[in-house]
Structures are given as structure tokens and as C-alpha cells.
Image (cartoon, rainbow, N blue to C red; front, side, top):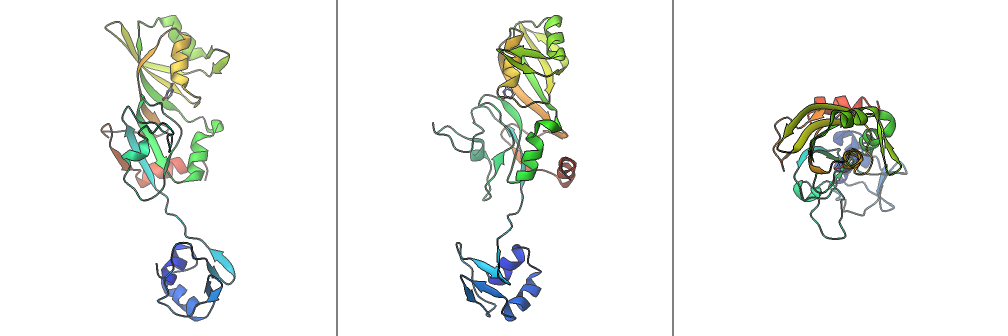
Length: 235
Ligand code: URA
């Protein structure tokens, strides 16, 4: 990359202004003052402006994935399983915001924006996450009431949840469960607590984000409007 472009991407000034700064002798690369505008910067080179080191600002990217089953949400897997990163074609290093189990499908946000990740996963923000759950057996009304009041499983307690759109079909029960915590295997544990095992789990929404027509395995970038809505969490 040319030096003036590096400086501009590092947030020093516009590319044109950076050319002036180079000509003024205020820029050095690897300890040597540079006056030529064509100078190339290679990876690993250290660039200084007025004695201060300049780092490239990485562009922030935000992808919304409809996660298919069979992918883990860790970025590297020691058992060599497929990870959600295998699905996103990007040169930028992104990572998932929160976790979904390997067999869980649905909405997963991936980004390189650490501030947004922190804000979205911080318990104090209580961001709603809505899951469509299919469990074995017919769930009784009293069990749904327990989920709505808050429930414990093996000493771990879960806050009150919302239950909607209950449907009974062929010895199984489907319902939408909205929780705001993000504890490990939370929905499965909550269902275990009422005596039902989860057959299918699909995340429909996280806060204001929905999949809205995105097919399983597909992904798209967040719209500016969606991003603005999420950034309200920490602005
Ligand atoms: N709760 C679970 O049990 N699994 C998930 O993947 C997400 C929430």
C-alpha cells in the first residue's frame, strides 16, 4: 500500500493532505524519514507521523447469518468440525456474537466490532433472544407457567421467559420462547427442567434483528438502519 493511503486509512488526514505531510518530512517508516510520495508500505512496516505510530483502522463489518445445523460457533475447533466462519466469505477476521449449539439453527451475528459484541452480550442490557423450540411430548400449561415465572435446573436459575405461539403436533410441542440471558445451553436446560427434551431449536430474533426471509445457510450484511438501532446500546 502507498504511504499516503496508509496514513489516510490510519485516520491521520485525507490522502491529499497526507501527501503534504510526507513532503514536509513529518512521516517516517521503520525509523527512517520518508519524503517520497510513491513509497510502499509492506505488512510489518512501522509508520510514524510526528513521532506517533499509526495503525491501520480495520473496517468494521457486520454479517447476519441464518445458521444451518452441523456448524459450531467457535472460531477454531480442535476436533476439526465445521465452524460458522466456513460459511462467510470475507477477508476480514470476524467472530460470532454469542453462541449457538452445533445443532441449533437461526440468527447469528458475526462481526469484528468488539464494542458491539461487548454491548450485545453484556447481561445488563437484557437483549431479548427469541427461539422457536420443538420438544418431545405435550407440554402442560403448568410447565409453561413455570418457564414464565423463572425456573432452576441443577442449581442454575433462569429468569422469567415469555412463551408464545404454542402448537401441539403429533406428540410434540412447538412454541416460541423469549429469554434475555445467554447462559450455556439455556433453552435446552429450561426444557429439561420441565421434563422435555429439545428436538429442534431455531433462533428467530436477537433484539431488533430478525432473519426476515434469509434462507438457512445464507447471510447478508446488516443494513445501516439495523446497525444504528444496535449502536444505541452503547452510544
Ligand atoms: N439455548 C440452547 O440450549 N442452545 C442454543 O444453541 C441456544 C440457546
